[in-house]
Length: 110
Image 1 (spheres, rainbow, N blue to C red):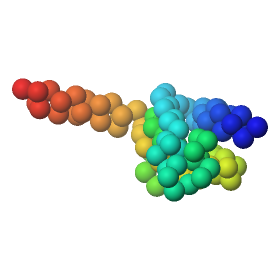
Image 2 (image 1 turned 90 degrees about the horizontal axis):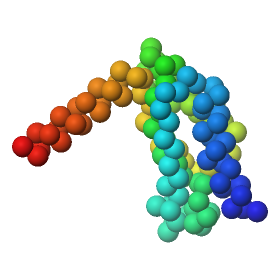
Image 3 (image 1 turned 180 degrees about the horizontal axis):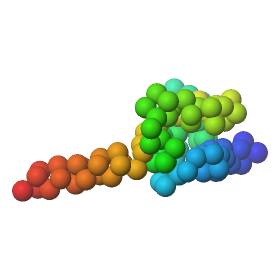
Image 4 (image 1 turned 45 degrees about the horizontal axis):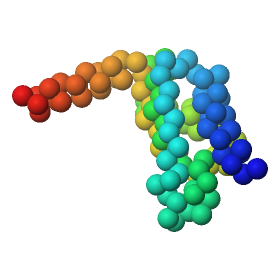
C-alpha cells in the first residue's frame, strides 16, 4: 500500500502544478534514493523531489515569489513529502539558460 502512495504523489504534484499554472515545461524527478541512507522512508521513494518548471505565470514574478506560488499550490503534498528542490523559470529565462549552456559546451569542445 505504501508503494502505491509513493507512485501517486509524483503524479499528484505534476497534475496540481499543471492545473494551477500555465506550464510550458515540467520535469519532476524523484530523488529519494539520494537520501535513503539518512531517511528510512526515502528507501521506498516519493519523499524527495527535484522540480524544473517553466510557466508563463512567472513572467513578472521574482524567484522567491515563484517558490511561494509553488509551495501554496502544493501545501497538501508537503504533508507527505519531505523535500522539494525547485528551479522555476519564465520562458525567456529558460531559453537564455539553455542557449548559454550550449555556448559554454561549444567553447569547451573547441
